[in-house]
Image (tube, rainbow, N blue to C red; front, side, top):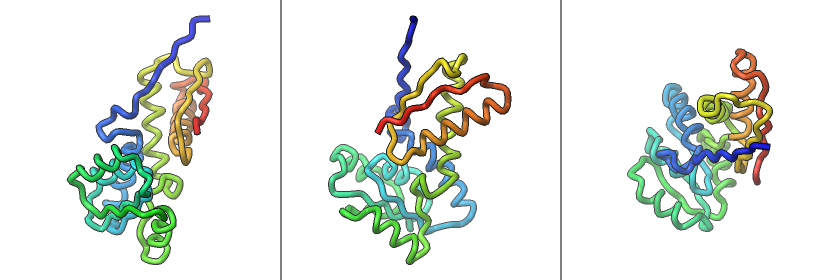
Amino acid sequence: KNEKLWIKHEDRQPLGSHKGRSLALQLSLLQQARKRRLVLSSSGNAAIACHELTYTDDTVLLVAPTIDQGKLARLLQVAGKGKIIITPHARAFAHYLATKYQYTDLRPSQDQAAIDGLMTLGFELVEQLHDLGDQYSIFSPTTSGGNILGMGKAFQVLQSAGILRTVPRIFPVL
């Protein structure tokens, strides 16, 4: 059997990961809605992308002290807007700001726009692999599953439009 392995290097994206895909759409929609108070808890990649893309000084980026030191260095080098807070309770503090002070939580699992932004992963794979279908298996590293949901949604849209006959199998790598 002639099997090939394709690796999609999202780490080579300008923002260093696929996180910028979701945040670009989220931030665009939030800016149009004139939302100023934004919060994001992150293990690094999303904070880097958000710090580069955000439009408001009222953005709060929360990272744990256990963050990879290379990611922390890159985050601190970005000349972005907002505040960076290092705390062992990043997710809980983000939830507190969202519920008590009406900050918009940018976690992908909290916002459908994030999933829609991640659909670009699926669209791009179809452009790159013209015969994409159920003969392919996609293994994707994930934490909250947003990238899996985004690709799956994109494949469903493309199948409904007649662009894909079948959809590839998607497997999360935790």
